[in-house]
Structure formats: structure tokens, C-alpha cells
Length: 132
Image (tube, rainbow, N blue to C red; front, side):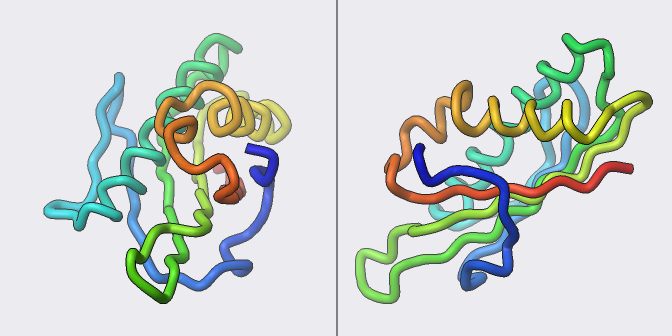
């Protein structure tokens, strides 16, 4: 995961886009009837988002709402595997500070997310954050 870090979705071609919304506890809403690659991206988003919610909760700054928009680039030739992904987090909650939320995202993506650990470690994953 040496290529993972903060970034923007502008650095990749938007071949796939999905969005997930945290609905409380460990539950999320996402696209109905996703393609297999879209389902994989939803799994990545929800896996990291669960960790972000739990980390911020432990810091006594519970999340009120959390949405993740995922943009991914794929190879042009078959098999059209995902080559890059970007996670855009929107988080609200009383007392949540940007540095704490960014650290929670970093830990979720680079340390705790099982889905991320299952993906190719050379596939770069970037993220950004909007609070409020």
C-alpha cells in the first residue's frame, strides 16, 4: 500500500463511479444491482467507512453522517481490472476535526480495511475529505 495517500479524483479517468451512504451502526446504502467491479468498489468504500466511524467514535467525536464517493480507473484491455481508485469522504459530526478525520481515513485505508488488503498492493488508492 505504498502508493496510498491523500489526493484528488482529478488524477484518474472516471471509468467507474459509485457512492455509499452510512445509515448507522455497520449499515450502508449503495447502488442497487451493481456490476461486479462496482460491488468491489462499494465493498472498499464501506469497509474503510466502518473503520472511520469506529475510530472517530473512540475519539469521542461520533459521526452524524458519512458518504463516500468512489471513482476508479480501469485498464483499457481485457481483463479490465481496476488500476486506481479514489475515495471522497464527506463527514459531519460535532467536534470532528479535519486532522483527526484524515488520520482515521489513513488508518482505515492503509491498516484496518480487509478489502484494501485483499486488493493489489501496487494499485494506488487516494482519498480526500470534506467536513460539514
